[in-house]
Image (cartoon, one colour):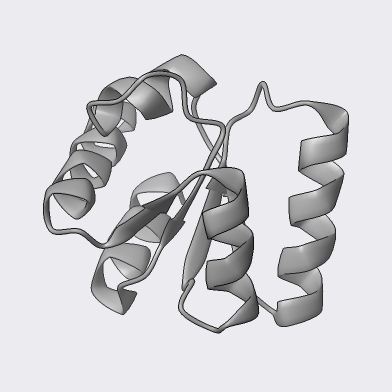
Amino acid sequence: MKNNFFQVLGLAQRARKLTLGEEFVLQSVRNGQAKLVILATDAGKNTTKKFTDKCSSYQVPLLQAGTRYELGAAVGKGERVVMAVTDVGFCQMLRGLVT
């Protein structure tokens, strides 16, 4: 199950349906493009609070899954603490793999 989650993340990245980086993800949440925010389980307290509050305020689902290294490896980058999924189909697929 966990492997499938990271494979779908990689597919979403190749389809250009992910936003990476804290500032870009915040911007994506604010302008309504983010359908799901994925936060690393080892994210810092301040980062976790910032994205929990922002997602709650804008009613964007937040999912904590994988370490920063696992998330980065899934999308072919270095460490990634936070990313936003901008496609409804990928959002549903990823949420289905976690529950």
